[in-house]
Image (cartoon, rainbow, N blue to C red; front, side, top):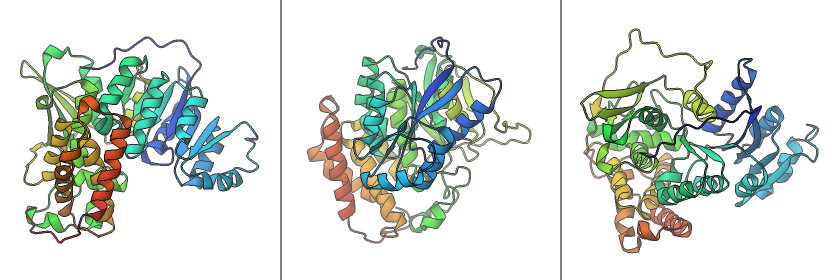
Length: 416
């Protein structure tokens, strides 16, 4: 299992951090963790934010620049540079702040600004190239971008093999497995199990699922997340992506990775040992905890977040029903097929979710769109042995076009 061995940390006064996706959910929570860490008098070193990358939320980005004083900032659109400069006028950054923009902006930021750790909180396929760039430059990656491993697992593993950098998972489930497996030898592990909240629809009657509205689906009972991941939580596409991630992160065979429904979202992952006993990782559903662990790894330090209270805690687990979650099976199978199939699954799902949120298709159409895209891609698929970044990009473009053209026919039945 590819869990990096903890290495003694060199003596340091600070650890330099670049946060990608700084105005999103993961990015803002990472900056909250960094701010709290630096405010603690017991900290062994400081966390210095040397770079930020964001999309279009320029007012929030400007606030972050004022607070953390990075050396460099990358934004998605070159045409937004004048507005960002205007927002930062009079903030004393002078000529010390380097600005990057456009398709190559994040790559240029990573190449220009020395860093120890990159927090990849980007959403979507755009996160793969920054992960590869950081690893190739020997920078540790605290990875919250699922797509890096879902669509580019072989490329990331190859980059890791060439690098001395470490890949440290931030997703609560993979952070949990990362910690649990450090205490096990591969021969001791029978299988690992990821937990799924089931999303907002987990207790709905099956016959109602197909016609759930965006408002229904976005009302997640335990996690506050972005719109796409919240929809993916209800279809369990997100959990299928996590199965693929676990395969590449821990070098586990597909038949040794499982998933169960766990409504409380307190147990994040489990490891079944060969002697029949289990290890479990418990914690509040609070992303600041795995973020802090990733930022300060291999040290484990005290935190300021509310601790998990065991008194009165009830834990329940339920099997995943294939007929209730057809998208889960489709996406895991795409991972098994490998090559460009996962890229197609990811891109088609992203478009399907966007169309669902715009009410162009209903909830029950999402797995049918995925099935149609994966079937149509079969004749043009590139196998894993021939996978390249350009092949992934081409599959991504093809799948987005296919999913955008897919007819918005009404759902055939509540049973999907």
